[in-house]
Length: 492
Image (cartoon, rainbow, N blue to C red; front, side):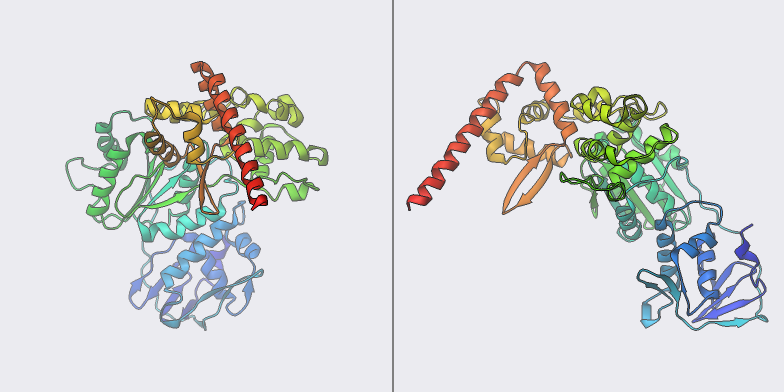
């Protein structure tokens, strides 16, 4: 049993309108009990027992999780839940404040009462869920996970977006874990990856949530549903989500998809790549470990190879590996699996053939998550034939490109400029191209791994050399046009 539960267990701590009965692990506001999770109560007890003092984050974590290694975001999430439950900040009353660089402090006056009337103990609420056990820590996602955790209970519908391998499911499951104590009727993941027939979606959802298909799905249940892998069932998902949110006012939905569901009230959250080192030199191992892509590579390498240590002479190779793999978590994990066989320098040398190299995934994962090529295959197969053709041909661009450049290189009698514009925007919407804005100009860019995949497809089609020549001619014309424009400006 947690040692916190035996500290002054007969006392009742009173602050504001609240009475904290330590023995019964119960907080009353008048006659109403507040529903809080066990960890949140542990944190509150430490802070109230030391009211007026600053308690460091490290000390709080050590007291509340004495036998576990946890991430700081766990603490932040429970502090946020405490503040919501206590109405912290409402009507000018503050209870818990953050002291930058130091920790947290409980600032409200506290009275200790050993004669308070105790009430019958309520049965502790145990959140229900079907979340899989997490075997590894989540790296480099604290900020976005914290943002989703804070917003989701209020916004109700959020969609995590991003390309294949960016870690949408990983982030969604971590958010769900952290919100277990918030949703009284549980947190439920509904994985749609194995469903091909849209007609099966409602049946699958009902079976997962143990609901009557013909009745009102969730009614007044206070729950979170994670709709994972919505990409191939967008229209059906949109209809189901709209119906669920309308019929269940206390329900929240977190979806993962390459593109928006376009449901009413949807909040989009695009997942960025992990932070990669800059092209400039890295001068120390400590500096390299500031980047989340390097952290993930090293942690996964250590899991595979006992005694693995990042050395000074490895920094150039590590930087190049992380950059060439675009900071994609799936690609980095698959690369780390090769380090014991190839070493870092050997892995770096093989990155030109990255799609074939990054094939040794987790056997227990879904087929499309077992390798980077499988993940890209799945995304590619969801495209229309025209989208597939455009994706292939755009791969001849080695750098970011504008729509005008795309029209100049790959449009033709069978691919008119107006159609091409729509397809490029669709590919960006599906997270197969990233969008960059600068100086009033929109540019599109491939991830290195996606470009390598599309180039391979273009080569198999037999048109690679033809479009490489068209690209080279376009670049040459653009170069000479730029020189001519500069010369004209000089004359003027």
